[in-house]
Length: 236
Image 1 (cartoon, rainbow, N blue to C red):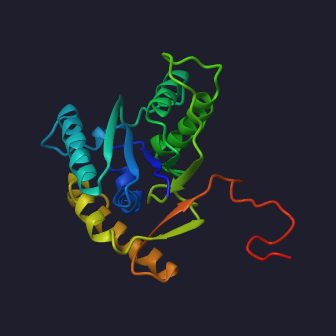
Image 2: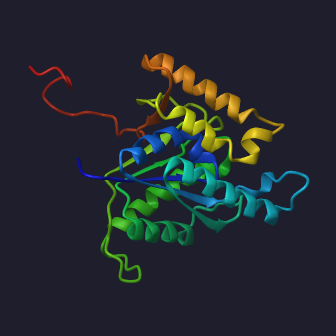
């Protein structure tokens, strides 16, 4: 089996770890390369005892601790929390990273979200994917790179998400819980019970998957259409 590079792109440190960290660990354990790319640190949800800049440093450190447990690499860009823009500069930056890192698959937020950074993220990725793949865009001599696939993950702030793919993460779930517990906001938020929610979501998705735990993914709209001469899986 050829080894793949899976890149999980989140608007903030902690987003993709929560949404798909067990899936990431499953693939990292199997020897695939896994990278978390955070477009911002998510620093403006800072606790009272820390400034925004202090919390940014803390979240980056937490992301490194979580990634180590999962078996992944982690990168955090310098964009500001709650100010993520869909513009040429951001798209070019992400496109250049795609050429440098050469992921085969990107997993990111669902397109519908109550958080504007989350909603911006898949649009940035989609535009960057195209720009990275087209040879007409010159980027410091980097060769064009087209990813094989692009999927969405399940986040509590992203409504109208209906999964297409259920993945058994029973063996990975305890490690996943250990990894997400490295984030202060996961364990201490007064506004949302992150740890309890994602543990319960893993159980709920596992029930539907007929396994102890599961996490889910979704195709971009229209990508799950199958065209051919017969019903997929039922040859004529």
